[in-house]
Image 1 (cartoon, rainbow, N blue to C red):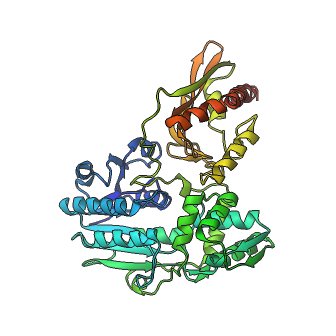
Image 2: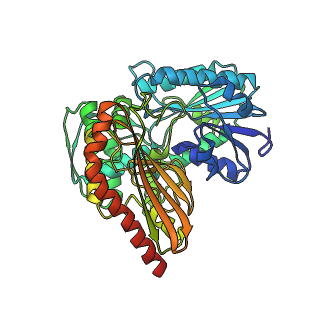
Image 3: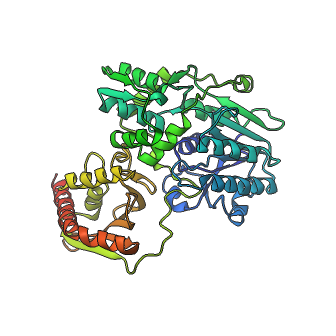
Length: 484
């Protein structure tokens, strides 16, 4: 198979690593086909020439067309944000994917899993990743299973955790888990391994442990981050703080919300160190150390731009699914319309700038209060912010929302990811009018049970103030922007 002549199937293209890998594959001239349950999310931003096929790794019938003519398949599917039962779903998805790959005559599967010593107890997520690797290796298709430790890069989960803790806390209480050794790998080196895996000579199946050039703990990474940023930090070690308590603490001071934080901590209770020399023997990649990886990530942070972010990722096997309980009745709505003396483009530009540092004027403090309550309940809060340096696109995390529809100068629909007794959306529609534009703002709530109804009616007075103020603020800013 020569470069540019083979067809590559990529799963997980909406994820942190998958998004970076997609860019690299396309720039090399590979014929890339992305698998997505919702192609609309990818179609807005995939590079020219990249195909997007509809498919779900849990449904065999949906994969046949996606696998047609595929030579190499990347499996970058995992479910860090899923609730209980994720192990069974992950394994079922891997079996379905492996069977489809075998039936289609795929020549190679490349899978990214996690480092961990099989002789010791593993966290449920690491154990599941190893089991997924085993399923793929036993599929009959030659498989390269990469096992990586912490990934450091602008926008990565681990880097965002280190950055937030070190920037926000001059004094830190550090529990035992922050001293566990790992072998972090920079995102560029990880992508280099994944790219080289396309062509590395391989007769069968292999497990490849990969990591950076130095062994370091989260404590060491925070100290190195502080050194590079010129920050003085006091770190006090304590033997306590269970994963649950630690995760709540992380949820309050970092962008990592509680359920993700707990799973992250459970996965790093034991060392994740490279013990095999397979990577050095088979690959030409010579990874940099954690210090250089942090420096590279900071350069991207200083430009306020990350090509992909961990919080924009959605799992292919169950993340961000709506509640399975039936709604109580008709959806509740709060819809408001205003004529704006500005063009649809100017109105939409203001709408699309909401969130992050811009906030939700004029009552941003009330939104933040609601976000703080969400954090206490184990939700995402507002710490994810918004993408910087580029326009919004479908699938982006935006504070405690996720972009569901984004049609420039026309429509922006946000789906709530906060803890709610139901489902909620916030939509902005802009249409031309005689005076400039007509802006409609609609809040929609789909209540579940009596708790959902009580929630809606209790908050109605606050919604009246917040949503009226938000609409007026958008209109004022749009007119000001036009005049400027």
